[in-house]
Length: 177
Length: 448
Image (cartoon, rainbow over all chains, first blue to last red):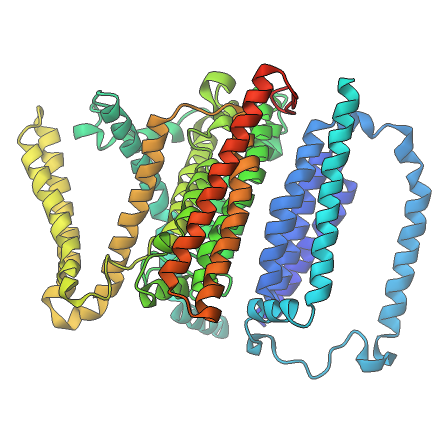
């Protein structure tokens, strides 16, 4: 009972603040509602007993990425940028993407029972409170069975970081000369 | 209706310890924060050869309460051009994040809100780091230049130093092999050593990073009085300002508790496994009673009878607390409470010592310049933290795979880490010399 109450609470908060995030005019307000959405999603992770995902969501998304978002929003005057014509052109594309997404979700939900393995509905899953502590499980599978993908992802991130540094350096040299 | 009541009673029966601890934390932390401020002012006065607050109560003992009352009844000003909603709730975020993260902490073996959280220490660090959303949003919502500069500085500082601090605690986590707070302390009891001796470099990096994370001097650039008035809090007044302040001090308690848990042996008394030192268990009531006796001694020297009476009251409060601590030693049936009480005592002593170091550094060191702060974070602390994680890992491998003596392995790898730190400082000096002589100028994005 408590589980479903928590789920509907967090899900409601997530959906409501996601809607508010899209409709707010003020960029900082949007960012605040995005943070609320992310926190509510973290709450759903916790309700599913995925405590590592919960804290990763909070540390990475809310504590890291959103802070950089807000940083950029504060430095750039978005109220001016929003009136820029470039953003107006996106409306058509946005409608297309939204329609495609809606179609996909509908198909998945309609076909849910007919897919191999039961589709959306997990069958024979262990009850949530009987699961082994998932931080350890996650670490074990990341560093044993999925070591290669993990390393590839790390190298990719490193490359992205080095790339960002190189780009920033080049621009500065160009300014100086 | 009856079923609901039954469910509620059931809920209370299961969770009453946690609920009581939670209420105690929310109720007591603001009071403690107030008295930490008083201690800080008294210490600062002592180090600057002054007396500090002396007027409100004997030796200023009632100053925090007077300050709290003043802040509560002050006019609540919201600037006209501010973003009222965000301005209104930004300080609350700061406060709530700090208090929530305390929910996962163990103040002694039995005083805790949440028991055995799997991700304990990560939860504390992750949730307490949300507090600076309050700082950023508050600075932005004030719609003032000082505020926004303070907020931006705070963001840059936190992003840089949180990386170093996060990497620094990995050293202790590697040694403990778990994220559960009680298990980390148990590991230190089992290995018969505090992790500060096994990973001194990690502790040092965490110390520096935690000072920067709590915006304390010498890294108090987000609220640098001489540059930014009060930084992100410039436009705040009254109770909202007090909330920011409480958040900052609660955060100090949180980082001190994390450091205590990870590096200073948590609630273990010194030498927990040495049996002929068991008389140390009697130390807490003795120390508190001594404080009471000293209060009586001071009571005779008060100039006004009210102050003298107040000192007597303080003395009796001390004796009462000492009696509570002594009861389990004197009466065998109460023996079960001994580990909990003594654990809380030693934990709070260690936390206070850590906070004392914070204050000491604040009164000793001048404030860093912003580019110096960034250099220290990115060029020295973060590389050093990475090397430190690597060294501790290598030491543990040498011990477990090659059968080395643990201390030998750790001494060798720590020496390696220290050599790297010397090299990093040398590199930084060379860069500074090159910049000052104009050769190979590396312009800095912050200092310009």
